[in-house]
Image (tube, rainbow, N blue to C red; front, side, top):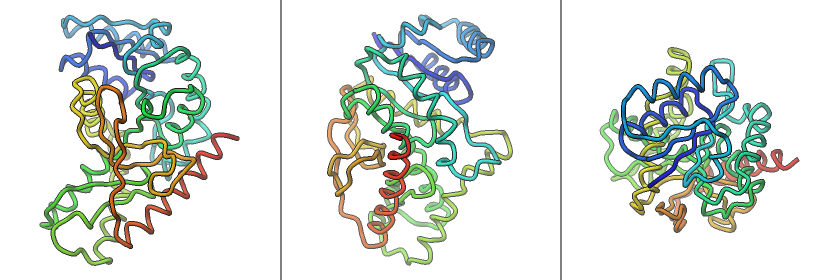
Length: 288
């Protein structure tokens, strides 16, 4: 049996709970949200699937879950320029959820932006092993990268490391053939703004994030041990300390099993250093 707790029952949290229900990911699902009418509506609608899943809104059940998802807080909207701008408003939410996680020993997946800084803060505050704190964002960025590559007839694996935000680092060196700097810069610029048309058109992203979050959770529950781009608390990997950053890591039942240090080319290395500097700055702000 697998128990899943989702803190934040809005667009993303609600959709993740729905996918976990209908695709049989968990036997028990606990939803938590300070918006009680929304919370009760989400639980009620999940019950209308008629599926054999135990549903709960008891906050005390969160600490006993196998996997907890932090999806609470304010999302991006057209007035929020970057994910980093959400740190001030979402850090108190992360602090509140840390209290709900007292005694938690499972795997914690961070969704709420700025994701890298929140993942680092949750790790430091909860005292969980860093292998149990996984930040989500790289899978979504990589899927968007793949779309831009396909449009240009480029082939090869689409990987995005670095920060989930302005300082994301698409890996062109893993593609077939050389990609000129001008084309790299143009694709990176489009990637940085790729979510805004969705946010402006429907108020926020849902389908892409929820599907990839589900895939990450399935990788954990099914012990698939896949290598995925996820945000990890770094302790010397890539020469970085004091932050959480997107890197390739093997993910299984025990969380982060191994972090891989890939060789980056000069263009990628420079942007990865920028990502590390940006993430470390936000993480230091979260410590203040």
